[in-house]
Image (cartoon, rainbow over all chains, first blue to last red; front, side):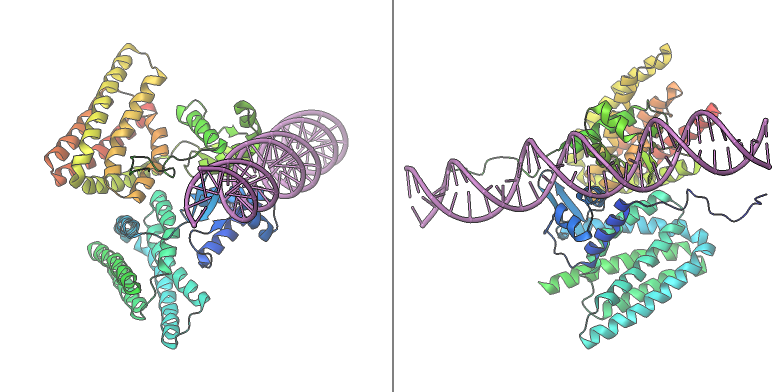
Length: 239
Length: 239
DNA sequence: CAACCCAACTTCCTATAGGATTTAAGGGCT
DNA sequence: AGCCCTTAAATCCTATAGGAAGTTGGGTTG
């Protein structure tokens, strides 16, 4: 007979239709940051580009509306969401602060499961941070390198929130993740930014390794505030 | 010429297509709680019942997926989400606790704008709570009365989160709102529940009136924990 | 010259049709 | 009887067509 085999249940293998693949493809386009904010996203045009009919594209757009990356106006179509204004930025950081601090608090007791993945993500973050720093020093800017750096950064935070063991916290964090991503693209300005971020990550990691909840929370708070500070600094530099 | 008239900008009058109305209609059906969890939601059947084509229904379902009220399995269709298990319930309360406590903290400084609406919501909550208590004493249970009571309760919390002045907090709170609503339907068991809830609301209101942030936060925390306690108590009573 | 109006085009939105997949039922085999 | 396979119905999913609303441009009028 079929003994208790480590067979992953079918319900866990999530099945995907065409609509989901179209969603992923459009999401890529948006996160690459090549399309400028405010520009129109024509259903028919996207359908032709992706070589599918408008119907699944339309459904993917409904799904994308949720992420905040696109805005919809009935009978007028979709647009790439405009860039975040100062007050939206501030509110976004406040929300992230709340979620990540609480997640850190809840995650420290589960450090056993968390630490391996967190160390791996931290190491990747370090490697790509150096790459980015090198490129900045050389005056280049490879899109793929920055993409990988962002992914490593996101993985670090994602691991912590996931280990908090609260699916709603995780869902909220992922929701903000897309908006945060668009923010990140504007944050790398000085070469010191990535290094500072890595140092702050290290502080969080070490506190978790020691099992020091209070220190971990403080370190996370300091990190988020650090990102906020660098963000507004770069913003004003740009102006 | 058109002087600076108090004309509400067109962008604020949200335009609505058929898809949005279908969404509202299906949402009503789900929040009424008449459809049993786990049952299938056929696209075609819904389309016939609402007398529209399957296309807008399909898009409304994509939108509903986000609320957590329905679950989707590709090529198999949609189902009414199963009832929340114990751990999901616990996580939901933790998430609500985080959001509402933080919102209370942020809302107290804006008490001027908040208090009028909060007092009104509180009064409504009181009125409907008495109605519910009367019906429970008489052994009846009018669906519309409990609906109104839930709406008043939601309005109270919504007012506070809205006054926090953070759109992301508000969005997250509304997201949890749908799930919370399904939870509420199981919470009214003893007649004392609604009275206890009202007393706890009063404590929150009074603390905000005094401008006492710490007390307001504590009162809100006590309220959420109170709901949690009553929820699990009624749950075990039922078993 | 500016403002308005009208017409043609573009785009979105809903409805319908057909292909693909799942589900349920019935007959045959072990 | 129990299990499996096959067949039919129902359902979901994608594609296409046509109607409705919005957008753009040119022409006209004050």
